[in-house]
Amino acid sequence: MLNAWTPPAGVGPGKQRIYSHAGYVLLQLVLERCYRTPIAKLVESRILTPLGMQATSIPERGPDNRAIMDDAALRRVVQGYSDQGTAIGPIGDQQSYFDFPGTGQMFSSARDIAAFVAAAVDGRSIDPQLREALRMTQRESFHVDQRFGQATFGQAIAWETVHLPGVTVVDKPGGLNNASGYIGLVPAHRLGIVLLANRGEYPHEIARYKILPALAHLVVAHGG
Image 1 (cartoon, rainbow, N blue to C red):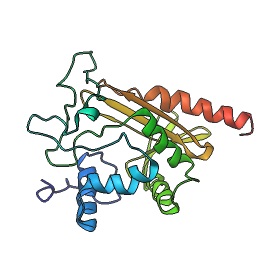
Image 2: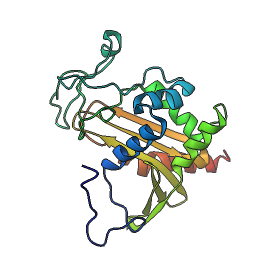
Image 3: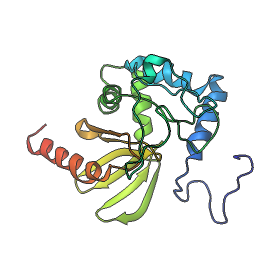
Image 4: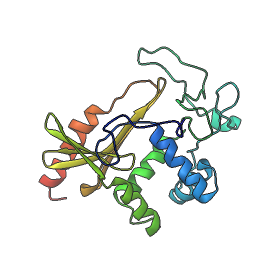
C-alpha cells in the first residue's frame, strides 16, 4: 500500500499537514527495520518497562479479531460501545484500519497512562535518554497557519500543539468506533489530563479548550 502511494499534485514534504493513520504505520516499519524488533517489543522495552506501565500492551490479533491475551488480562478489558451506546464486537475486539501486527488497539489503564503523562510533563525521575525522547516528540515540526477560533495548531510527532491565548496545549485525541481516549499536556506548567472511554466518540474538546487552559491560568495566578 505504501509503495503504491503517490502524493496528489501540489503536495510535497514540509508544505502542508495531512492527517493519515498510515503515518504511524510508516514510522512503525522504520523502527522495526532499524532495530530488527517487532513494535510491541520495542514499546515494551523502551517505554513501558522503564515507566512501570505493567497494565499496558499492544497484543496481536487472533483469527476472530480478538486480542491474544491471557485470561487474567482479558478479564480486565471492558466492552466497547458505539457513540450511540450499542455494544460493538466481543470484549477484547481490536478495531483497526490496517491488518498487520502492531496496528490494533493498545490496551492500558488510567494508572499506567497517568504514569506516562507524569513522565511526559516532568520526567525528572526517569532515564535522561527517555526523557529527551519524550520531549522531542512534543516539539512542533509543522505549523498550521489557519486559525480555529482563538487557536492555532501545529504538528509534532503524533502530538498536536494547540496554541491558545496564554497557554500551549500538547495533546492527542484518538479512537475507533468502540473506544476513544485523550491525553492533554501543558508542559510549561507540568499539567496533564487523561480521558479514557469504552465508547466510540471523542470527548476531548472540553479538556483541550476549557479544563487545561483554566488549570494553567490557575497555576499562573497562584505563582506555581
